[in-house]
Image (cartoon, rainbow, N blue to C red; front, side, top):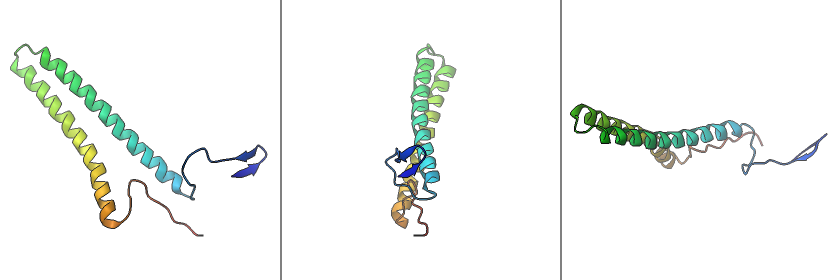
Length: 107
């Protein structure tokens, strides 16, 4: 709690404040937001590829374009998901948690 001119201010987040930990919390939130955006982009790409596939009317070039778009969208999402899996595996091996690091400072 901080007391001052405006009275008592409490931390509005559920996070315990440690000097310097705000940067890691911010980066963690950015990474989670990026994963959500990647998921939304995947859904959008699948829908547009499906539209291209439906409107191809047997045209092999458009059908190939739709399948390429689906493949690229899924591959991109696999890469994003693999980044989180690799970070978790590294955390288990090293005994740390790179997705939510903790800063230890002077006591």
